[in-house]
Amino acid sequence: MPLDLTQMLDPKLVVLTAPRSVAAEQYRALRTNLEFMSVGGALERIMITSATPGAGKSLTAGNLALALAQASKNTLLVDADLRRPMIHHLFGNANLSGLTTALTRPDEWEKYVQRGPIANLSIMTSGPIPPNPSELLSSVTMISLAGQLSQTYDIVVFDTPPVVSFTDAVALSQTMDGVLLVVRAGHTSRKSDIKGKERLSQVNARVLGVVLNDVQMQDEAYSYYYGYGEKKS
Amino acid sequence: MIDLHAHVLPGVDDGPKTLEDTLAVVRQATTDGTTIIVSVAHANDGHFDVSRAQYEKAFSAASTALAAASIGVKLIPAMEVRLGPRLAQDFAEGKFLAIGNTGYFCVELPPNDFPAYTLDALFELSLEKLRILLIHPERNRGLRKRPELADRLLRMEVLGVASGGSLLGQFGPEVEAAAWQLIEMGLIQAVASDGHSVSKRPLRLSAYEPVIARRYGEAVSEAMLHTTPQQVLEGLPVELAPHERIGWRRFFAGR
Ligand SMILES: Nc1ncnc2c1ncn2[C@@H]1O[C@H](COP(=O)(O)OP(=O)(O)OP(=O)(O)O)[C@@H](O)[C@H]1O
Ligand SMILES: [Fe+2]
Ligand SMILES: [Mg+2]
Image 1 (cartoon, rainbow over the protein chains, first blue to last red):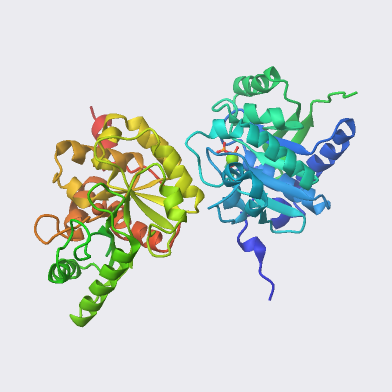
Image 2 (spheres, protein in one colour):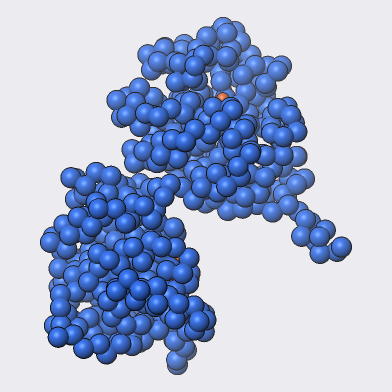
């Protein structure tokens, strides 16, 4: 009997657990939007972040990665949130090794990639937490690792900590092709969201748009994507 | 009960000197209700540096003697390794033993300071796929002086185990206060006997149950003496949730 992988998955990974839900449909729409945007410049490395904690970054990263893999994109999901790593919890992976191991042993980074629950999805969990996460994430090794990852995969999705609390995501945005900001309906204050966006703009990160998470409609919570409508030449 | 940390092997460190002493301390533990003992010996310490060969020899001698005396206890091998700058390399070269095959590794800080390389050395160990069990962190003076260091250990998911004697004031009021503080912040999630001898440092876990329960409730004493040690032996991660004193909030709210 084949193993039922959905048993180990967080049920909120709706793209896989409830593919017909409105929420799952919205993640697929987000994927389509990204496909359109990549016409204006390659989108091989995408970072998911938010201004404040608990916005739904990890859930968005997980669902988006699933939606991309379902569209036959060879996808890698990386947990670069070394403050509160969640990807291994969401997908039921082990986390004794991962990104931090790959960063300290970059020649053998492939050993720290795990198989995801569906074809085309690979997962790199956070690995053990280092004493100084921002140092590791802004290192030269991180830049070259990100380069190697995007050479190997069609698209790499990075989950990160919130920008207002830590510098990690701001530093990491420098090696990304684009950034998605998650805002949780009714959760974060507008002021901190603007501050978050500012932090990223200050370093010239390409903010692709905002994902409005947890919109309540017809007894169902889902995410909605707003692009910034940027025009790339 | 599971004792996550006790010195019961003969003639390898400051624990029992002879096999008779071993039988006596283990008998004391089983009488008290302990069924599993993580049997440590000091390694990489200035005074005691048990080698793997010495450890294994003493371990099998103790196991044989316990079986012959029909003392029903399970010993799990482990070393209590003193912090040093190259623990990870030494571990990779096979110098040290983790706790059985749980993937947990016992590290002891030096008593007086918290060396600058501490966090890096622990991180390097965790890159070897080890989870760190920090033995009696309350007894480290550096950590007592700088509580922010405990916070950094917590963020690195280092799991602290208090020595029961600390909770009873056996190492002085400062150590006792530090133990409670580290429990409340979440770094310490389990208590072990750190037993060495029948009289001075006994293997009597039951003595700690009431002091923990009085302060935090029975659910917490159950977790610290039973559930969490069990999780460690199963090689599972332990959540570092803070513990709150019973009635403490009410006490302040009422003033
Ligand atoms: N749309 C949603 N519907 C229901 N629950 C949600 C939704 N979005 C997030 N949650 C829940 O809220 C919590 C936080 O979500 P998540 O971990 O994805 O946020 P995060 O931004 O990654 O948080 P952190 O800042 O801690 O990394 C989780 O328990 C998640 O299951
Ligand atoms: Fe000890
Ligand atoms: Mg998260």
